[in-house]
Length: 347
Ligand code: NAD
Ligand code: DAU
Image 1 (tube, rainbow, N blue to C red):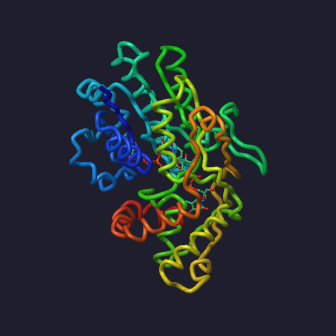
Image 2: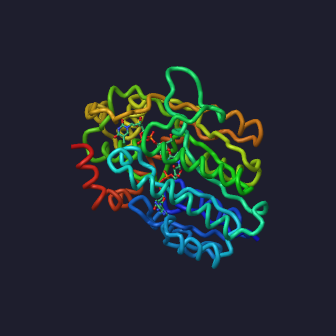
Image 3: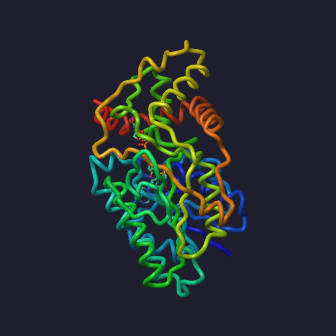
């Protein structure tokens, strides 16, 4: 019997992971541990509330006693750790909460797992991480699993630090661990502070479309369900102690991506061609803005047979449709505190 603790399951990627594990593996008990910060939303999980193999616990990963109690009362056998502060811009304006949650929170979870699991070889701590730990690329080259870490924002430095701690528990205490470092995800339920949903939302409301710097920065985009399939595969079939890079093989300059979104949303809303593009606004660049991320995902393909299935045209069309059909979700999450963040950041 597996009792799997998934942290951060009320967030963007987390809710898709929880849904996959609850529905595909009815024999597993899934405990979703989430502090429900601004990025965690119970609306994302409404369809799972009645499932008998699903439990939500509202707990902060920094709260050692509460985390210990969850390990004990649910007899946790494995962890998939996604809980984090995840937005680079917020890490620039308020770095300390990133260090608390992403570094100390991860250390706290590792420690609870170590104390609770009597035979560490029987359990797995799976850490979900980012390609940003590798730094920034020039025009050529790809991040490989052996690329040296060179994080450059408080967010990526905190994630790099958490990766090191997970490896330290493996080498020092013999804990079974797996780490994946993934490129930029997109899809339903992504919080609209991130580029793709922010641009869709602003097109709908005829607001300026902010592009940082000259828009030539490159990201490698992956549809979220492809990431979930990779997590499922690594959890079940990946090798103890290993790291796997996950990427979409789908590099886009930000400005090119924004153009695609303008065309797609205008077409869906029956607006004249060029309407949204006329609102593209180049704004002050993100400090220390990494120029290019690109992933070599050949290891996970060779060893586990994973590759992305969703091409960008299909993935963006699904994403645009979801946001247009879920305007209430969007308006709920963009009101209140987010509106203050938005006004402050983009003023
Ligand atoms: P998100 O911001 O949408 O969700 C984060 C979740 O963690 C939220 O539900 C939030 O409530 C929860 N959380 C935050 N602080 C917490 C705390 N102290 N205790 C308990 N829960 C807490 O993030 P996301 O985009 O879904 O990313 C999930 C994970 O995947 C993160 O670890 C991130 O670094 C990693 N990742 C994200 C991407 C991406 O493109 N979004 C790519 C690669 C890796
Ligand atoms: O690479 C994986 C990472 O991808 C994850 O680890 C992070 O959690 C996730 O947030 C994401 O980080 P990015 O900084 O790449 O994503 P974001 O959506 O914030 O920005 C994507 C690109 O778009 C980046 O080059 C900055 C730019 N951008 C972003 C915003 C919000 C703009 O030009 N304008 C904007 O308003």
